[in-house]
Length: 243
Image 1 (cartoon, rainbow, N blue to C red):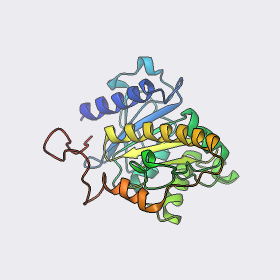
Image 2 (image 1 turned 30 degrees about the vertical axis):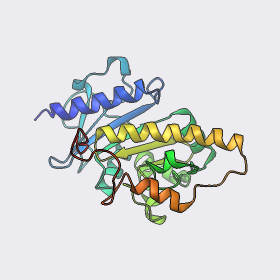
Image 3 (image 1 turned 120 degrees about the horizontal axis):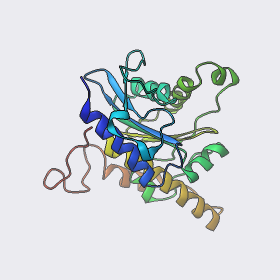
């Protein structure tokens, strides 16, 4: 089984995050999971995006993390993606970048505050930042532990990954995800845009506070969940975001 469609979709994801200005050099990767067949597809490690083609995308076992054929090594961040797919069962695709403003928040160890409705349309609150990894976590299974601190962040704060589809890894950078390839890329784009807007807003008004909860929930849930009424539903082209 060559997973042609999955490879094509993941290749396109990786090219789209470069086109969106989220990735410089090889500072990023994207993946998608096929849960029915127990695999994920991810960018190979260190490959120049200008050379990337679907046949370069690496297929990895979701169960044991081992590549399933081919000569290319998967991204060094594959263990992080694996931890997220195993814990966040609603997630179908993941994007990791070092986009400038989001990474600035991550390096500062700060969440991206939800100051307005633009962020509230996509994230039900602040974009959280994880705790720093310990020395032991860095020296032993670093990439897997990066995924584990993300999962820990969501579990300890009782956050729903479908309501907050992204995170900042402390001193590292952003990860975003979605229920399909398109939504994962869009959420990565929105995360960076919100980080840029938050920095500008705080400069303009250093005393600025978070959006009121009633306005936050109004904007988020009019686009998400059973009571959502934004858009055209199934009448035009608003089809569910698949892989």
